[in-house]
Image (cartoon, rainbow, N blue to C red):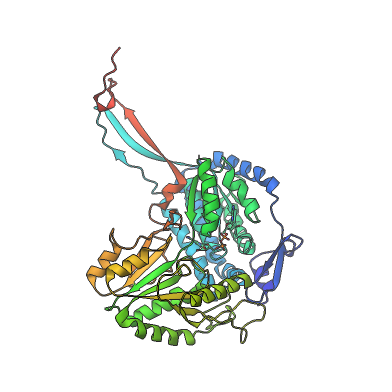
Length: 499
Ligand code: NAD
């Protein structure tokens, strides 16, 4: 299929793809595939006012009925899975099965949120006063801005949107300026769901297109109480304080520097499979990609040998082609950042396998690279920095305490794992003295989370949680209620105030 055919199959009309100011390139071959219209920052006030208007109606719709819209969204996504997956591949360069997997993740969170819409439970609490009852009620918050990164161009929107809609909040989406087409295609799907639903308020789900200047209004407006922002730590460092300064609620999902500890007892064949998928999948452009391997000295040489052999056999190329496992990086700037990180790693004493630019057997115009393994003498500044590309730094360790210390000694805290058959090591890794990340796994890699768990990380990853478990609470306001059904008015803590 040509790029044009893919966009057409996703319902995008020529008029939407031409005449704008934002040029969209496919990382597959660097071709310009569209020039989309950007939202004028001046219009953001109207967008936000429309979302506020929608909020006043949507908050009154019973939650299970709100869930019905999410159910329809899931149904429409099922129908359009292949078409949308193909746009993800075209615009983000993911291999076909990962493009489809991303849409499956959208479907999964819809299923979750439909169930949630009938399970927005609050506690009842024993009151210390006779004839009194206490409880918690969860109310909708208001418009939720969803600012997303290029590497999960649609799944992250759905994690937020499925929950926000069930919780009673309208959504304003600002996708990455690198991936507006997946957003436009997703909105077509959403519009079909809204039409079938029938009486949803206008402006319930809106899309704005552009860069930080468009995002700025969402970040600074008091009428947008929730700002869920996914992207680099640099972006979070700007957005987080601005939202906090106006007492908004930020949900920050920022960079990771995810590690795996491989202990002497590990099943090495399993570890190798997990390492290759986590470090190389999505060309190392997942927030949860494996970037640091902390291996026991006794097995390091053996494991690195196995990995370099596996890396040498990885099919690199056109992500649409069957069998290809490593697609392109998002753009040439990203490829250059990878190359300079490898040079820096070498200057710090690292020994690098692979990592070269690939120009043969791949579509011309794309930024293709061979994934790299860099054996490092210590955890240097380069190792502590997230480079959004397939570089796997390898460090040795002697004791498990040393491994956990190295593991936690980076600014980021998203995902982590240990491969071991030793129960003490596994449990220590998951304990309060173990991994300091939001996600910690045993005998599976750090990437490829399921939607059932809360997703997010600590430290410079931003502390936000999205997706499953009780992440929905971030999209609602909690109200504590005390009801007095007695004929007395006792004060708490035994305070007397008689007059
Ligand atoms: P990016 O920070 O360049 O951009 C992310 C989004 O933020 C874009 O929509 C961008 O327009 C917007 N943005 C940037 N500056 C802004 C500002 N000042 N005000 C408002 N909006 C602003 O990130 P990217 O290159 O698209 O994505 C890669 C990064 O995202 C990596 O660091 C990766 O780890 C991270 N990421 C994190 C998660 C997670 O859940 N923790 C998930 C995916 C990606």
